[in-house]
Image (cartoon, rainbow over all chains, first blue to last red; front, side):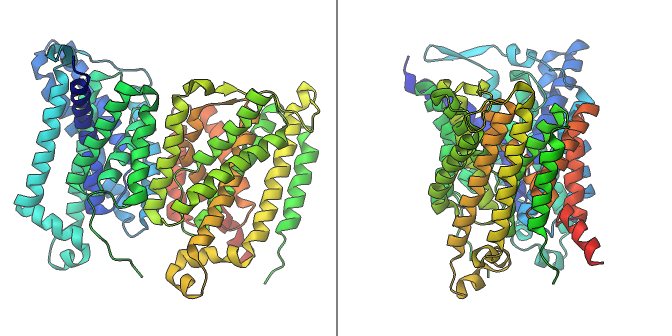
Amino acid sequence: MDPILSVIVDGIMYSAWLFIAALGLTLIYGVMKIVNVTHGSFYALGAYAGASFTGAWLARGYPPMLSYAVLAAAAVVITLAFAPLVERGILRFMYAKDEVVILLITYALFLILEDTIKLIWGVNPYFIAQPYALLGSFEVGGLSYPTYNLILVGLALVMGGALAWLQHSTRVGKLLLAVIHDPEVSRAMGINVGKYYLVTFTFGSMLAALAGSFTAPTVSVVPGLGVEVIVLSFAVVVIGGLGSLPGAALGAVMVGLVRSISVHYMPQVELFVIYFVMAMVLAFRPRGLFSLAEPRKI
Amino acid sequence: MKRDRTPEMIGIIFLVVVLSGAWLPQWALFILTIAFAHGLVALGLMLMLRAGLVSFGQALYYCLGAYAAGALGKFLGMSDIFVQMLAGAAVAGFAAFVLGFLLAKYRGIFFGLLSLALSMILYGLLVKNEALGSTDGFNILPSTLFGIRPAADWVRYCVAVAAAFAGLSAALLVHRYLNTPLGRLAPAIKDNEIRVEYMGTSARHAIHVKYVIAAVLAGAGGALAATNVGHIDPEMAYWTTSGEFIFITILAGTGNVIAPFAGALIFGVIHTMAYDLSPNTWQMSLGTALLALIVFLPEGLWSLFVRRKAA
């Protein structure tokens, strides 16, 4: 078995997961200039909703093949229940504040949501291995991989493609571009900026929830699940450039490959390398690899 | 302008701790010591915040200080609390001096994210380091004071007095520093950095100095927390630890050098009580408090105190 091949296959699978997890974060930053710590909360909400909805679905004896649709539906439902509330109820009053202050506000919201999750689902772990085991496995170069991971790769491609298409080829995307460049002028031109912020926040959070619900079958869903995802997706997004879609893809691939190389050859530096890459990128290109020059503000 | 009474207040607080500490129960002394340890870290963050910088990775220096203190005990058998604090402060200060050349160039969100990345690097290294106990960390020898081992009942009291001494002398020194030209530069950097440069001073140098001071304080605080708890683990470098320090700093405000210690004590008491009353909703109470503070009291609890005095 060629070790390089397995490094690449592992790297691609991990990259796909990272990309899904980080996509919403970069979208929300790109449009609203919010470094959103609640991203991790929506990931966890999605994971819990996915695990409990799918668990209930399977317990009633409904067709297990449809459990993938249930996972997706769970993420959508839970986001619609929470994200508009967070944006309309709290965040929209804060947009005038400094970027760092808004980050602190989302940190406060993250703490609140963390306990909301415990109040809803309790502190006992949830397991739903069935969707994971159902598809069996496939072989690459003598090593077998769970087929479920291919769903994640597919999901990443579909999400990235759909978002790029939305941004570049639709009317909504063009209007969104105007909002990104200058919210004030957009408002003067008759664009409902508040609505765009609401939709962006909800959609970005939904991407986090989808990442969570599709990860739920591969892990045990426990409190504190979203905490690690926050820093990981920060790393991915910062490497590529905050707010850039191709940047998030590049960041995910870089982190995915670097991690898989270290897991195969030097497992003791697995976590270290991820943040080392992040620090290096920040040190030499603070605005990330896919960033444009920005004029210094006086 | 009113006469500055901060040095007197600091002296009174020290006397109160020394005198009342002998009667306090062990758990209260524990909370008090942790408050001084966290207060030291928050004091450093306050210095940065005055210049408009929020570090999301101050846990890096807190953890470095703790591991420096732990390593002294583990490999050299040294458990004197003041030596540990000095070692923690020195290691953290040196690291900050080196990293400061890079970080002093950054502002706003990028300063926060880079400091976060650096603290996560330390976390990543410690988690996989078997000599230092990986994720479990290791235990620390009971503290001694100038080579004397206090009786078991008095260890906590001695540690608390040492903590008060270290914390309050740091507060006094920082208070002096705030009145030097370099210290007074901070709000100016926050307001308009380019004007600071036009005045002929270097904002980068000022920030580098503040960054090193903040790290020294955090390192001493980490060493103090380590000997007080008797155990250290990589979690001390995790981003949630940095988050708690920022919480304390925002809670306290930047009004006075005593504020971070008061903030840390309030945080410790709220944390202990909320955790005791309802272990599953204490984060919610913290989050709600933080949100309310940012919205209604952006200058921290200390501003409440000052405003009432002025009125």
